[in-house]
Image (tube, rainbow, N blue to C red; front, side, top):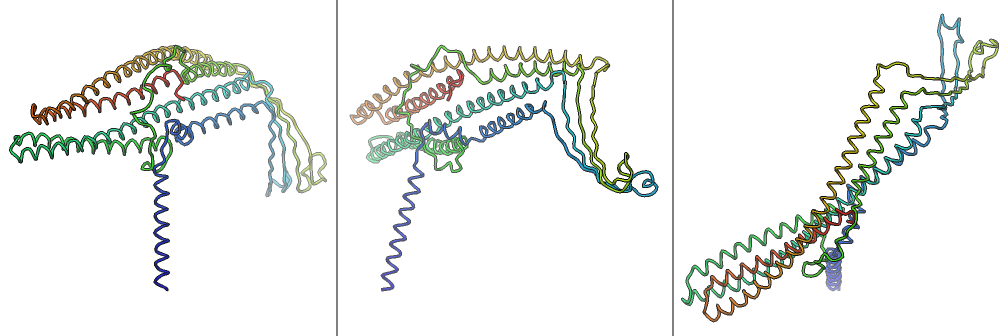
Length: 431
């Protein structure tokens, strides 16, 4: 009876283990589409997270700037004790709380310009976030298609491995029968070794591609990443992609806002040349020994208030403040030149991305034609070899040409997909 229970427990354990393994494999085999990968990158990428926090920080700066012109209320308290001989002239001990209200009346426009600068900084941080998102999405698309390519290359090399193994066996049997020379067998072995090296390189490429994609989308386990797309399916035509539209790039917003910040900084420097006026109201209470009330020495407490109006007028500083204004004007002109240059560079970048996308489209057509011809050549070579009209070397050459044509086709398709992503980033539509 006990032995039967042990067997039952073992069976349950084995079934549970198999079920757990199946569940793990299910999650491990979960495939990501390109859209899902980009969505995960926008949600989990560290660079994007940092950019979002920078936006929050600038929003806090805006809130601080908005209250700069409002009254400020402060409270303080002081306790004191005087020994001899000061206690003969002043109250020996006491406690004095104080409340003060300060209000800037005129600052030469600094408060207004500060608010405008804070608002512009928010716009710049938003543009910086969009720029980071565009860069991360481009890197994600690139990593995604490189991962697809690595998987396809492994399949290719595994297929070539089977073909070479079959061909090697056939040639070795032919050599054993004395029908061919040994050098045909050796050539086949060399190709097998080269295939093994390429297969190992493709597997390493797959590992690195998974690690890169996992880093971009914020997943901790790169081995669990897989992609749904293949290079045998999908649209590799640029129809509907190329557009005659102006590039909407966050870099332009950044540069334009940099000019705006320069103008506001210039206004702030000019405000330093103007007087400032401030008002302060203070209420004071005092509690302690007799004499603490200067109006009535018999009382042990006192309540009073006072106000202050401060006016600060810049008179003479050897022209340093005016020179700072001139310096800022040069900085603004420099930023304007930078904006013009950036727009010119972006136009060139868009044109370059357009031409490259068109080139990659043509390359796919050429590589497809080469693959079709190489495939037909390999079939004819195998038929002629079996008929005894060509040697094994000719078949090996045909297999090498087919492998190279197939590999070039994979590479052309990946280059097209990356060129497409680069083009969409160039015109500001990577999302």
